[in-house]
Image (cartoon, rainbow over all chains, first blue to last red; front, side, top):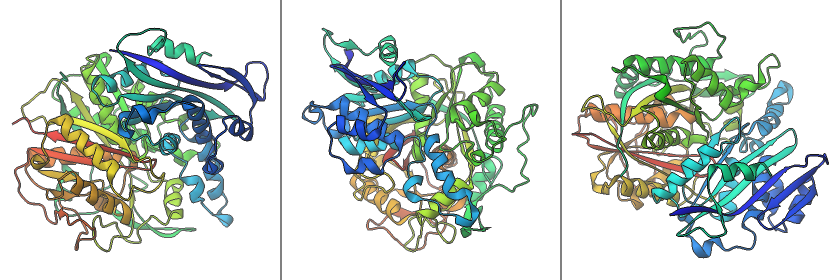
Length: 209
Length: 375
């Protein structure tokens, strides 16, 4: 059995044009202004909850939209057959700082429940699960650098032990105003043809896009 | 075929007790470390916290470690000391679980902000033990602890390591207390899981450490038969109303462990004592056929230790199975869930072979773990 990356989506800061992002999927590459409203429009989704989310969840939801656009994963897999394994470096630190502002001032001490719910590393994963009704194995790793070996080995094991039949795998990082995302949709196949194989080096090279 | 994974050694450090043994004794005796504290803005809050002057005396205190870092090191040293075989660090992997790490320093400008990253904090701790392997850090809200064990089992089965040290800690901070307070999720008395009059969660702090290996040291080592996770895909901060997600994890864990629901001798529940969590769990236990098994939660004794809770509770379950003594659920008086559960009210002898541990968390995650005695 071979595991393939049947779709991917990379969102990263543009190397030369600051203020813009480069978005690369298996079918196209485009450049957009680093504004969530622009990204939302370009993903052509209708999901009002998006505007209540913290930045990292917005990044994850947008990437998952680009990733799964136009394919019917539910036609192929039941909810519990789809797993999700994500990672990042800073957890929810960007939103932690936002929440801290609501409790710093002791004379206006109003901790915000709407922000607090986002102060956990895995909430972006929860948002993606809700949006796409993904109910299988889920895992969130914190890693200082993009952990291609960790992701590959753990996800391959989930496949080999029959815990998942497909999986969303990747990295969703947001700090200092910049998204840094790679999402993969991984499936299995009997024989490898033209697809990208789900190997550590392949994942690393997609992250380098 | 998967290789079996065994628990070789453990350590629990909480405000209730300094060691696994001390915590077990106090849990059997229905003792509780949740106390009231007065906060200038939030008023009276209940939490299980270490005395401010509590010193976690570690063997080599040369570096400046924060409270949670010392707690981790103290507990890991304790677990290693109780292990009766030497560890070769090159063959050891550290797996960490924490939801908030050093969060209490978030607004402290003098604090090295890198250490707010749990991954970097973990590196410091592994380095203290001279371990050079890339530590793995799991942060998946309240299921972090069980998922760190899940990862630990995976790592051992890959045969790259002889031992995996799984350790989880979280501390009570103004950050987390005020967040739960803003949700109106905190109980105005020490939490009473599964009771009719339960009124929310009490937070706690502590650390649990497990040393796992595929090579048992005695025939008393408890086996981790399976760990399976799922997601509700329903709501970020509330459990599913049906318990479907947790039921799917429990069913998956039973299938994976090749254990029938009738074989479950005891359940260590998540039991946060919020209205919705305990109700949801009772439904999931019914769906999976295990609702007649004796069930308890220790969150009424220790509070909810977030990322540490799954590890601490797994250690308590394993030790109670070895002692064939059920752990009682503090504060339970009257059934308060739509499915009547067999809640343990006092510690008693029971022969136990198979135990189930469950957890659910913010973000919709659920994990179920099954322990089994070798004999």
